[in-house]
Length: 62
Image (tube, rainbow, N blue to C red):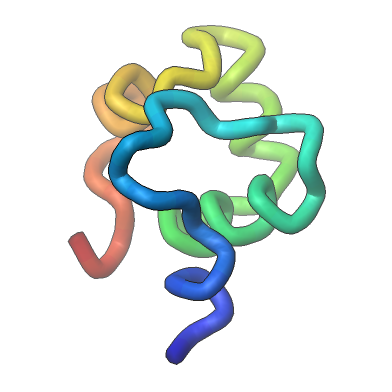
């Protein structure tokens, strides 16, 4: 199992905990962007996963 799949939360979670380094790294990898880019996107549009997906495009592997 990949690093991303082990560290991503279940489907019930609606927001990314942008302050948790492990969660942030997993989501950044999934979106194929840097953690800095993910933090910037979250500052612009918020941490809701659906909103970030709309802003950044569909995560890799989905």
